[in-house]
Length: 154
Length: 154
Image 1 (spheres, each protein chain N blue to C red):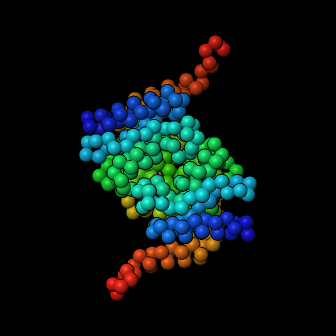
Image 2 (image 1 turned 180 degrees about the vertical axis):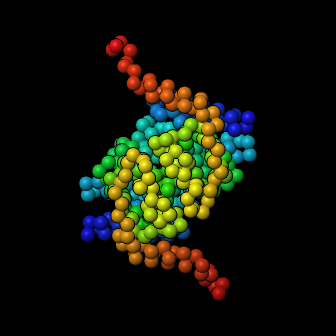
Image 3 (image 1 turned 45 degrees about the vertical axis):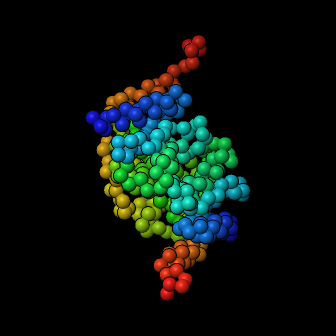
C-alpha cells in the first residue's frame, strides 16, 4: 500500500498538469517516508523542453537535500520516464523508480529501450505498472478532450 | 571551419568549469550563426545532478527563443552527451549535435549506447570527434591535477 500511497500523490500532481492544459504527468520523490520533491509536466507553460515532471522533482529534491546525490530516495511517476528523465534519475543516483503507465513511444525503461540494462555504472531498481489503470485513464481522458470541438461550435 | 569555431567556444566554457573545480565540459547552441545558449558543467557548484553543460545551454536557448522547440539549432559540446543530455537534445528537437571527445563510460551517442539509432520519433544528426584532441587534453589535465598532492605536502 506504500507504493500506491505515493503514486496517488503523483497522480494528483498529474491532474494539476491537465488543468493547465499539459499532458498529465506527475512525480514525487520520497526519502525516509517524506516527500522531498514534487513536479508535474510544465513544458508548454515554461516553454522548456526540460520541464518534465521528473526533472522538476529532481531539481527540488536536490535543493531540499543540498546535494546532487539522491541515494536512499525513491521516485514515483505516473508515466514511464523518457530517455532524458531516465538518464537524470541515473545521474542523481536514485535507488528506485516506480512508474504507473507504460509509454510505448518514448519510454526508456522498457517501452522503447531499457536504459538500465545497458552498460552504465549505476542501475536504479524499477517497478512498473503501479496504478497503471488510473494513470492511463487520466492520459486518455486528456487526449480525447483535445479532440473534442470547443463548446458552441458543434 | 564553422564547426571548429563554435567548438572552440564550447572548449572555452569547459575551461571555466575546470577553474571552478568541475569536470571540464562546455556547450553552445547556435541558430542562424548566432549563439543563443551557453552552459558549462556546474554539478558540484549547484549541487544538482541536472546541471550538465548541455542542460544549462538548452535552458538558456529555450528562454532566448521563448519556445521548447529548438528546430533549426545546432548544439556543440566538448564531451559526448550522457543519456540525460542526449534525451534532452531529442526532446528539444535540435537539428544536430556536434561533440568533441567520446565518453566510453557514459556516452549515449556511440560511447555506451546509441540513443538515436533506437525507435524514437526524432533523430538529430550527429558529428563526433571535432577538436577531440583539444577536449581530451583538457579533461585528462583536469583529472591528473586531481591526483596531485596539494603543494607543500609532498
